[in-house]
Image (cartoon, rainbow over all chains, first blue to last red; front, side):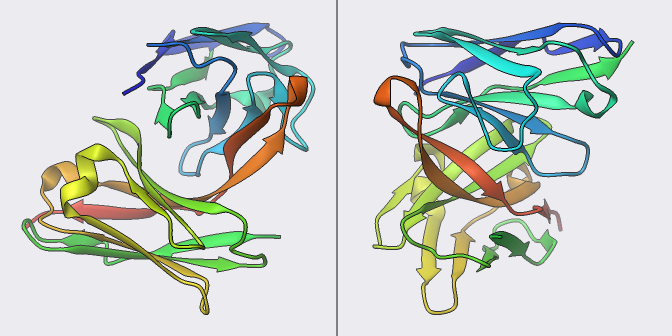
Length: 106
Length: 125
């Protein structure tokens, strides 16, 4: 099974900050990596697929990069609605999720 | 647009069978795969399995021995049956649609682009 490890588990940031979350796969998954945002009490929402392609309607302040085993999600200027939990997910061999990164108010 | 709505009993006794359903509205079952996930504080988000409108089914290994997924295409309803539940099966259960997207370098990528709101299941006597 492919394991996905995110870091950090949580971070504190302010509106306007640049935020980066990393995700590491236990084996090479090429660019088969998706990112989701989950707000409290809601289902996850797809942000990015294929490492770096934004889902329709997702603001351009979100970006993704990486390949192989190391990936990152960056929010260029954090907005109030971005405080949430973010998950990475590999789609190389079925599906595995990272444990999540909580972005909190500083 | 496509909407998914899970429903279930809320509370199930240990050793019993959990039945969940997921109604699909506003869109077609084809050509998508339809997945079930669950989320708990202890294990995070876990993929349970998927079913395709053609009948293809894949179960995640930890669930394989006690899981049955089915699909009623005429009513556009997914179903999950999980036998011999324990407290470890307490979680929020989601259904989701898998879609294929065209990405960079002419590759195709699968992702879960539509999710239900989730249904909470507690296993307790």
